[in-house]
Length: 471
Ligand code: ADP
Ligand code: ASP
Ligand code: MG
Image (cartoon, rainbow, N blue to C red; front, top):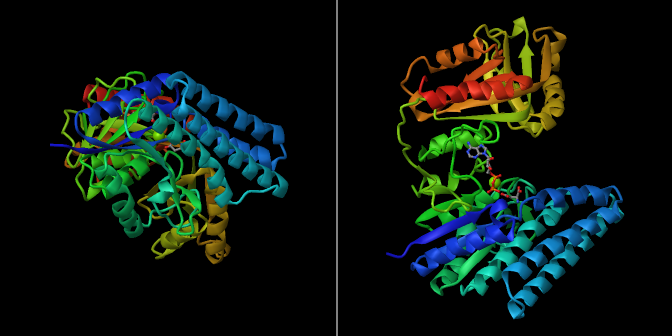
């Protein structure tokens, strides 16, 4: 039976002519087999960073900087098209579209340059060009290989609120648009190639879903079209036991549950955006993570229930650039509401809390936020708890910057006593000082705060447990 498959290709997967050649054979392979494919693409690798840097250049009156970015982007996309498509209408029209997009980009940068500042809406508008360029390029190459591939801006279907840079989908409206505009294309045999990462407000302004958000885009399109599966094509063989850049021994996990992968992503595994599983959960749709550069490998299958492995700890992740805030004072004992007010003040200061831990004596509790919000959070808490601080019920609010969160994930932890203890002793044996510990409420993860300098050693220590089955 014919299947509908949503495939998301990441930055490296569309980052070179060789990679795009693989994309073509993957997509064409499915279409030739009678399946329908929705393609969601990221910007070519490095492009999003370059665009963000160019906004800074425009603000700083570095005209040469953003003009140079425009030129380089044009060369990179044009060269790729020249390699992959012979001269002719398809190539020339696409190159003209690319040139027009880059003219638009330059105009926006010029406006930023004149104003000397950029609003979040403008940042999103500028950064959107990465996906808008790659999407046209990939569609053109697919057309050259005989598919009826057409490029679409995600905003044609995916409506979001106006929280620029971190926009939230408006589900009902998105579903309606997808039913009305995207489904008919599929019945007509079109292979839509859609920009990942982007959406649009009701007024038509471009929004972005947050860095790495193309995975989430893939999940949104997969869920709203009731796809049979979502495939995240990336540059590694699947979800691995650790970040392969931190520990070369990392192995591919053949099966992971939605919940496990959710924890892994939330606690720093870059391979999937943390929101990716959300739209999929109710549908029970399988997600596969596969390697564009090694398409023979079956990759990782993510489903409702991951397979129980011999090891309780399946994988280890870490998050850098976080700060530990500690609120402490003897007068806190038994005083209700201090934690609640602290977290509310933190949220109002724009921080999301990554982890919380309380000492049993109730004399202090600590929590982690990203570095860039720590200072505002501390000020907000000090303002909120001003009276308690003045009365000395609370001694102080401390911020510790040079720390990281290390998380061990595995559904087998549920019902396996003593995992935290074993992990603790391994850290102790290797001389790593654990500053705080917290267990996820799902009981499928345990997180530790350790000094930044111990990051690699701590990952390796926990990874040893995952690899040799000692925990
Ligand atoms: P894409 O551009 O395809 O979205 P990303 O760079 O965002 O790719 O994510 C893939 C990268 O995630 C891999 O190259 C790998 O270095 C990193 N990574 C971190 N942790 C893990 C993990 N546990 N499993 C697999 N990859 C991981
Ligand atoms: N291009 C965007 C980024 O680099 C989105 C993505 O790749 O998922 O953040
Ligand atoms: Mg990514």
